[in-house]
Image 1 (cartoon, rainbow, N blue to C red):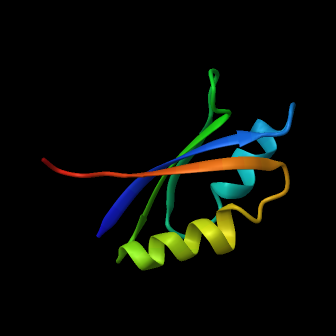
Image 2 (cartoon, rainbow, N blue to C red):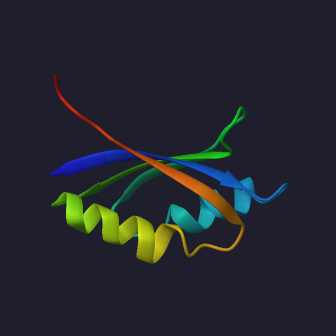
Length: 77
């Protein structure tokens, strides 16, 4: 199992709506709107890194109102 944080910047005023839509995507554990340089932070999981990448590109990045994403895989050091 691979988990990652997805840091999302949105269009002004769209953070809450973006988080609500993303929260319904299979594999998304949490989606919360936050303050700071990012507007939404998502915790997601998938069976493989490839599946995680497909989720981000095919589902998360397609949500209206997103301007940029940064995916940070969780590592156990």
